Image 1: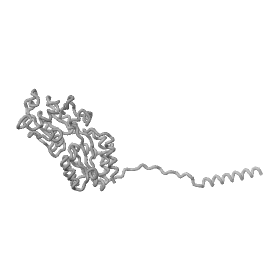
Image 2 (image 1 turned 120 degrees about the vertical axis):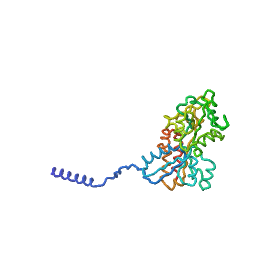
Image 3 (image 1 turned 180 degrees about the horizontal axis):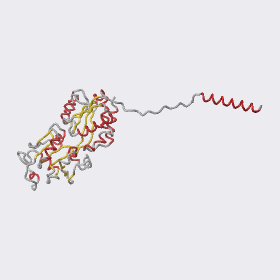
Image 4 (image 1 turned 45 degrees about the vertical axis):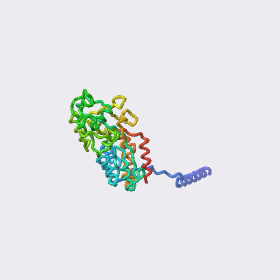
Length: 331
């Protein structure tokens, strides 16, 4: 009898256990977490303007198309700051790069098109550039110059009525050979910065040979011992093997342009300037690839990371983050 009772209890216990196993668990099993993916975009982004900003923007575009959105075509031109705005105002391009701030008359032209600056058009400083004075590698006498010497030599009529200035006009012990002046032409913001900010809108020497292409300027100076030219630091950096930069004395001794000296509060401040890109917000609202690219430009993967590689001093991270917040608010 005792054994029968034990067998009965075992059978009942087994039945209860099996019934429990047949019930669903009260705690649901969580599905595997899927990592969010970047939405793949397609389309075209059109940029034109500053030849100075071109190497930086072209590098950012290359990285974006290679690593982020391979189906988006980012086309970057280098017609010059003024030429870029002439395309930007009628809406022919999405971004206008500029090596100088937009002019009042350009703002007025945008507003005449119904585009409000600061709302429909956004301005972004992308980096800081150091205007660089370059000379031929064989020039052994003008490696250091004061800011006033540079300004005066480029001023029309300062030394000679016909503007055929000799090096010895600048310093008596320098060669009695004519200086060959070069620079970018009026399409470029670099010319405007030099003329308006450095020369204070005084006439430039009539003998100055002004060119559209920076590569042409590099070639001309590299072949002429008496040549001198001005352009952005980035073009000097990529042509150090052909040119040398003049160390400029702003009053506290000669300063060479470098990424450690270029800055609004740094030793090369006298020739430092911000460079920009301008965005048509209406285009960004219509085409997600334009807005997405704009965000990449001001992200830590865009200007902040690539500025130095292209001869520009990056801005503080907080500046780029502020721009990114502006772009995130666009719907």
